[in-house]
Image 1 (cartoon, rainbow, N blue to C red):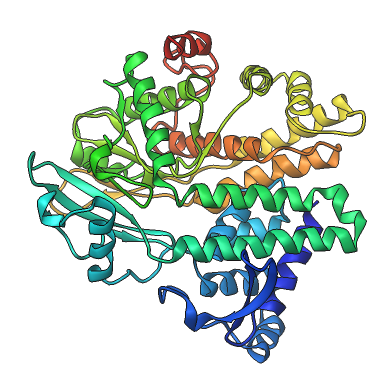
Image 2 (cartoon, one colour; image 1 turned 180 degrees about the vertical axis):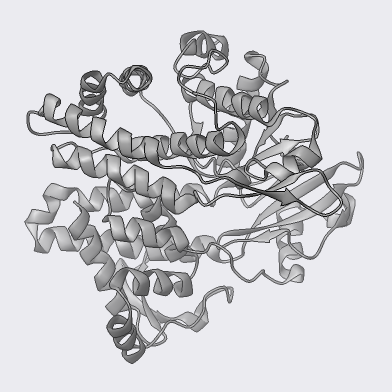
Length: 474
């Protein structure tokens, strides 16, 4: 499945030379070339010309060239790069690792344009809703940018997430082109149909367009908020409150959470008196409980999206990327978790075979033996938390952590590769889920290096999930 997708990506390199780029015209149902100068918003750098691409391909590996090209082509291709990075079961390892570097940081849109967007969505002047909006964005990504603000009536501090003008049209046009290209390739080469290339592109299209509709993200936040209240987890964790009267498809107004990233041990100790280990346990219990108690789980729990607050609670933010788990998948996942805690590699192998899709009989004992070898390698990897001398004027030690996102993904790729060696193809949801577990493994090495997650009675991972699901179904 991987190589046909890679071939499609390579073909795109040749389509985007000079200032012309292919588009699928939804009105005429034809592929046309339009100048990038016609883009509604100048968020895309000029693509490299053919001769520049040829020089780059001589100087650097193709995955590096493609990643740099994607970053220059704008929102669609930056998001596509992120999709590649989060889908090790679909794409080659070298591309997954390289696209971890795909930067979703772009120049902000001028405040006057963003202000017009906000007023258009609200149907009134910003001064009627907000007493203050910082014209300098807190963050600017390929699809949206975020501004800090204060509500006029309540004087509460909030953040406004605004879809950049023209981005949705560019995404639809580009993704339609990708979709029809995949269908043409399958028609020209029937072998590609067996790899579900068009199906993969359809999934990419749906996933990326979902991120442009903030009503869906607001719904995911509401699901998680209800879960916190119904299960009594609100004292342990929280999420932003979304102000529906001031939120639409293209903008979302929500509470600003004051906190520090989960991996910043210095800042955590300065921010709260809560025990970092207990904060971590609370975060892990909250997230793992949501796997079946919520229709969707947070599928992007990197440290920047988990904030430690002054009261010791963990704040979950950015629900733009989510996943879902079927009951049968959860049953197999529970078996995988339980077998991991007991080092029962045979049960672990059977669980992996159940979680994946296979067209052949799986050598369970062979897989079990290889899993044992792999887990010994994983156990040998240290996060290398280096405790330095206290910073001047403080009693807090500085912390340096080498276990970054790249290491998390390398471990994930090893598991996926091992499964593929035995004819097991994992769905993308499994890759998303496993990546979140690896994030928490990283956090454990930083905040609680002596804790055994799977054997610590304070950790509810894999236990009492049925009661959580029942509580949220009431």
